[in-house]
Image (tube, rainbow, N blue to C red; front, side):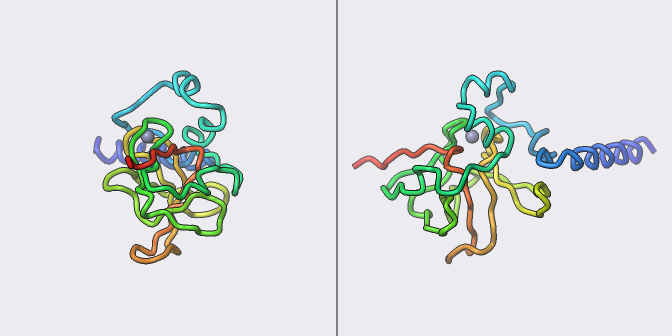
Length: 162
Ligand SMILES: [Zn+2]
């Protein structure tokens, strides 16, 4: 009986969470990650724009990121914790105005269902610090058919050694 009651209260907590709109990423918000900081610490570590994207799941204006035009060989990493996320070999021009990739590095990112903004989408966050990166869609190019639509503000770029 206790188990059933616990399950029920977990379910109502989940419903309450989903009513918070863009804060929907319940599992994400409650998640524990290898790199964690308090909200105040994150605000010190990140710019206001980075904080809005990584910690509040905001979306940057399309065509606003210099990373759209980053075509060198190298690795895109998390602006929150430095975790390598995408090799430049998986970047493609999606025409959306956001840096786009067809495959992340193994275990670099995790996803969760996102019902904010009146849409059902799959949000993508960094597996190490939980920072919100963007969304993944199934209209990408081969070989995966996936389109990881990322916020440039959530990432840095490290060129490959010559
Ligand atoms: Zn991270």
